[in-house]
Length: 391
View 1 (cartoon, rainbow, N blue to C red):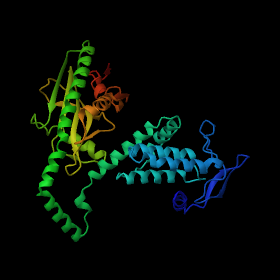
View 2 (view 1 turned 180 degrees about the vertical axis):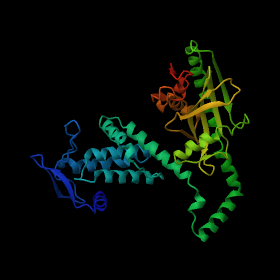
View 3 (view 1 turned 90 degrees about the vertical axis):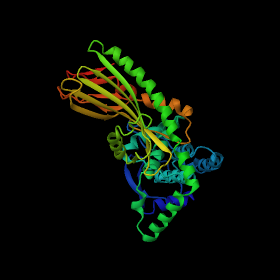
View 4 (view 1 turned 180 degrees about the horizontal axis):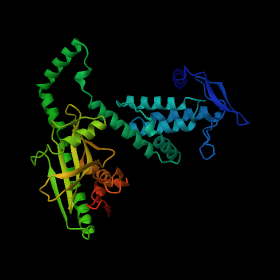
């Protein structure tokens, strides 16, 4: 099957580039559906060689790989896909097209587990190559994390597609309407919706954990900026239990659109907001917990963002400027089957994990790059004189 797959993927490619013993590059015929008969070790940027499996050992190494695969049938498919992908690229059994075959094998593992194919685009190529090299040193977790992130994003984007727009034939439309009505009024659907909404209780638990982090961070900043001016801090819960679930809808919807997702405000929305004001500046940090997908899916994600407000005079007057910054590069995703205590450590790590953020100095027009997270967004903000205060 491997040989047939390779032949299909390279059917429009007749040659590949080779380097002879004198260092000259030339085109040679591509062996389609056949293992390599010459070494194919690429040269790194520093001039050293990255050595793949020698041709004489390819058959036995591929046999070993295919022999081990069934043993991992019941393991996490993301980890199995990362392992198989890396081991296959380590062997590099063909003259060319190894990456194409490796990605096809990865897709096969995921499809068998009812998951979606992964796409490693150009923006991820450097991170992907670095992860493969770390896997060479027995550190597979980084590559598995990339695969997990891509799979999660693929699922969330698929859930955000407007299904109605995809129906093109009247017959399909009629079937969809009948099926939807029958399901909607069925008892099983009511029970299922109640089960999916159990994710709200996880959101409430995470909101409480985020409050603890915000309280600690704001207390540290309040003490640190005492020589600049009197700091006033406040923390407020948000959600249907506080009758303010509609707050920050615009910011959440916009950030979701940029990521190709749909933030579902037809379902409950929760948040925690912390703010600190010194003189004429106020920094607001928000962690939002919202449903993802046009229909109720039982999946929610947490995102963090900050807003910097500058006031002309008193606090009662309208702010003269406002800057919005997303503090979380990747959302924190959880489902109705998630146990809050089992993800507490991962959520705490996500809250304090730095990500790039740009803050522009309005007076000097400089553009310093700082690290921002929920923990750090309370630690740096532009003061009234235009300087960046940070702890």
